[in-house]
Image (cartoon, rainbow, N blue to C red; front, top):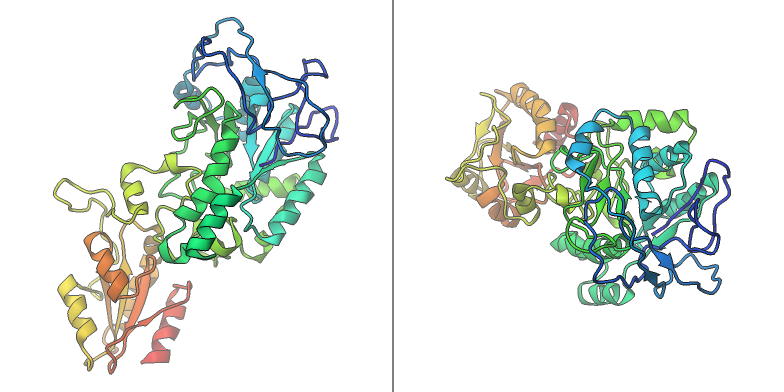
Amino acid sequence: MAFAVTSSSSSTAISGSSFPRSSASPDLKVPQIGAVRLADRHATVSLSRRRCAVKPVNAERKRNDSIVPLAATIAAPEISEKVEVEDFEQLAKELDNASPLEIMDKALEKFGNDIAIAFSGAEDVALIEYAKLTGRPFRVFSLDTGRLNPETYRFFNEVEKHYGIRMEYMFPDAVEVQALVRSKGLFSFYEDGHQECCRVRKVRPLRRALKGLRAWITGQRKDQSPGTRSEVPVVQVDPVFEGLDGGIGSLVKWNPVANVDGKDIWNFLRAMNVPVNTLHSQGYVSIGCEPCTRPVLPGQHEREGRWWWEDAKAKECGLHKGNLKQDSAAELNGNGNGASHANGTATQSDIFNSQSLVTLSRTGIENLARLENRKEPWLVVLYAPWCRFCQAMEESYVELAEKLAGSGVKVAKFRADGEQKEYAKTELQLGSFPTILFFPKHSSKPIKYASEKRDVDSLMAFINALR
């Protein structure tokens, strides 16, 4: 994890693993992410106060040029005057129409050296640019999972040089990584989901980092993942992680670009001549670990390049797990079916509605799969109506069905979420939504459409090659 500090008067990085406060003696050291603190148990601190009621004073230590935080840093509490409790829900409403620069300035003003920017190595470099523009000192951290792209590591170095900063990197626990790889292999996430690997390589290092802070700044945007981030506020009490004072509510989470469209972020980066990860020019939009990230095609949503073999709706690694509503969390664990009534009927409106499309029931798809000699070939989409990527291809699939009407090819749909999901995974090659299958005339085994191109011409080419 990396912390960086800059100020308006100098672009030179403050090296070492500690950063001086602007009003403090040069001998005092700023608390580090992951540092161990001994707090007076008799000093009660509200978890949502405007300013912390405990001012840390770090013990003097020997000079160390390493950027790794000292685990033995000790903080002795100094009780200050009583302060008012902050209502962050109200603050979020007040700042909802504020610019990212204004929100960033407010965050740095309120928390000073007790707040840090979480930098992933993607377009969230905009956060660092906004922080620089405020003229206030700021800190930056990043999680090195050990499986990032080479381009991302080079980008980290470029960002440090561009802003004259030094970042502190948080790493996963070597023993935990070793145990995971030895027991399940290097690529177990392709078989049983990404959550376990992300928990070891990302979530736990982040948890350690945030225990040394009272607030953090993320690059979350509402348009990044409509299934999980559509209601992200510009500031909130973190619903998942704990901060320096411990306990739920002890950490504040700032999302300065929550209301900004992705295209506007890129316009800002170009206008300010900010360095960017070279992976973006190769088709990558959302960037994570190398095995779990791939480029997206024109028209695809940016999160479709992450964990593409899993259901499309709940694409979160656990760093922002608080975004998941109860139904989304259920889907993430593989046992959900979208929002439902008490009787289990989904409230999400159905999609792929056309007289040219055949709606298959469970019995219908089973009968189709059993036939070895069909009168005509079938094209079937396995879908979930809540899936954004299914919704995105609805128009092209309906158009394809209308074009193929009377051509000798049947076009159908089968809803494969909820109770039908396990059957679809074991019998129909369902990996993620949507999955498109072609059932030939003279073979019982369906052929899976492997491409991510779901426009009419690409699907028609697939059909013509097989019929």
